Image (tube, rainbow, N blue to C red; front, side, top):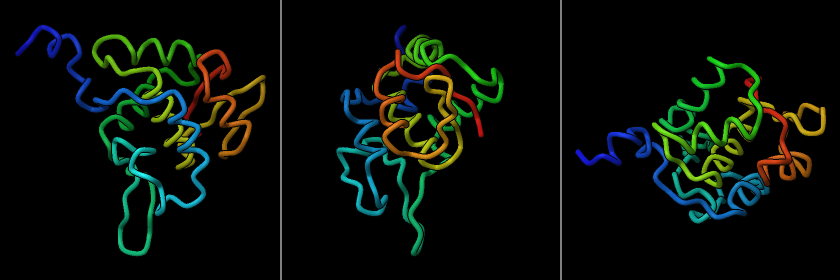
Length: 140
């Protein structure tokens, strides 16, 4: 095992370098069953029969939810920094994409300018767009 693999043991849960607009494109998708593969590089959207939804069992999403269960509402910058660091090593754009997926699924809320955002829309897109825009993330 390489040193990098030991230090970033959870990197494999989200081993992509997301583009800066990835979270925004994900949140702007009206119908998940029509999401472009470039807008869902970790295949978080799953189809089961006639239903399409977010795969909440995806290891990266489970790690984020576990973190939020442990720490409660977390400052957006702290969350990005913690998942950028060991043992994850995920890119900040990938983390924002994962947060977007959890928001889309109704699993978390964003805190933007003192307001809780629980549904996708312009405020959610703005709040999740850059690390200095959202004040916090918490489970719903």
